[in-house]
Image 1 (cartoon, rainbow, N blue to C red):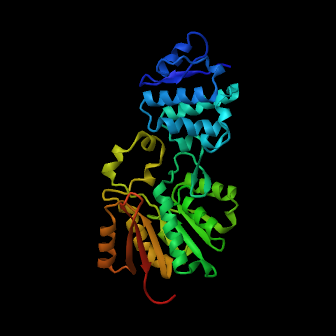
Image 2 (cartoon, one colour):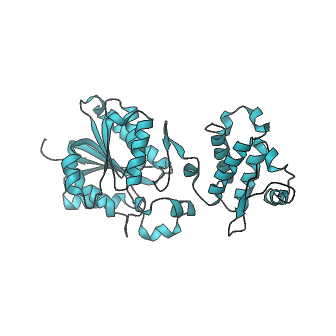
Image 3 (cartoon, rainbow, N blue to C red):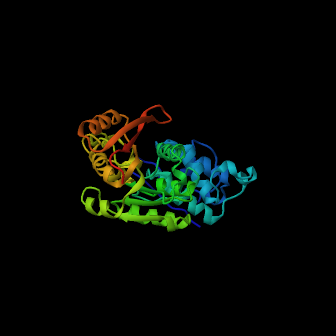
Length: 339
């Protein structure tokens, strides 16, 4: 079998060739180490080779990138979960081809989550593919905050418990909540057809499709439909686009080239979609229902000032910090006449 990898414009090997002359490419990429021909590489040699190739070409997290991709090829989550003996086993032709192809994608700065087409979110494994937004660790913390809110209010025992997720992406938040609360049903909304399709696929794979309704709606143009068909709910949760437009250009190539910019760009002040959610929430939540938002650290005081000034029917309850101690989550409550 011949493994072909061409050069990208950075001068990094994107395809390596087998054979005597081709071994020079291996030597160059490996910092001078004497690797055998590609067809006889074992697991450890191939993993180290591509780690060094990633490092040479400036790919972030070169070690983890190579490790995750190799683990995926071997049918595991992580290399640490495998028997150490595996590291000395020679890769088959099929495994070699798969590993080279996936590493080539990572070399082009495709995020590892898209390369291996899945990622773990809390205790779930979700399918991932571009351009659907990849859930970050901060959003796992958001889910934990929502679950704690259910427990503290004893909402988890309320019949007909219902949640609405706006800007659902892969469905990570809704599916994680459904997995943790068997009596919960949810509606997940996104403007992107790719996101809606991926959320439906993830729900089906996890066996949660019967308790999740997925809708393709745009908050800015489908407000009437959203208000009529998606409420009332006990809890509204969202990780909306909240980056300031001016910050978009400074994002890593992994984000700029592959993730949907509409899932990231929140407008000049990062509040374009958040503002829509704040005005919709009082009409979607039951009385006493809670709104949870993941936002930019600059947003919480602005959001609090807005709801207190505009009297839109929400009470600002608290700001919670993320694991890096940055103000990241806003918790608000609907107040008004009983439903």
